[in-house]
Image 1: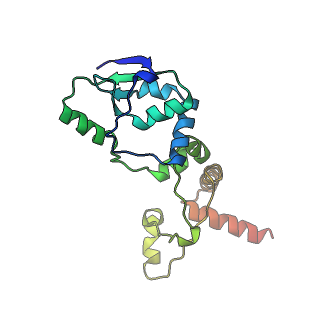
Image 2: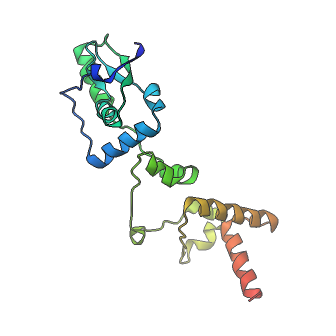
Image 3: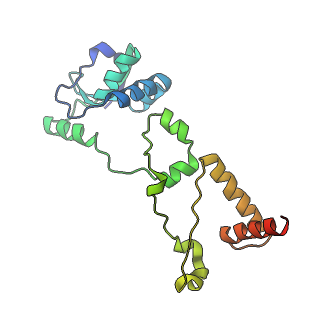
Length: 194
């Protein structure tokens, strides 16, 4: 298999493509290609010996809308007809899921949206907080026969990181064990200095 740059007009759309793309996502794809055309070099459109698309039909359409003249393609001419069909389906499968905890901590949500990712929306009132027993650790015994209450706070990614860093600094400076003790320390401090 080899990658080459060819005229966009020489690449043929696969009429038997089982995937479709809706208007909003298509616009995001066109925008993505315009803003980051190197992505096509890293992940070229896969074609058969006749330059019919096996993988990347939506990207081909988006390249046309983006006004590209030439595009990188990867020739998979060695595949049998059965292997081509298998590739077409498997190339479009999505086995994994997004790790939203990781994304919301390590990525800017605005950038993710700009890059074309659909961020799920939710109604905060529908979220049912769960008690994280790992955080409670050795204090769990204290709560087993008592009613446990939990306060859930919502922050954007920048505020979230700042709050955690501040709580961590307070814990270290005053030799506290966890965020609960740090928050209780701040509440006590507020009460005493009110």
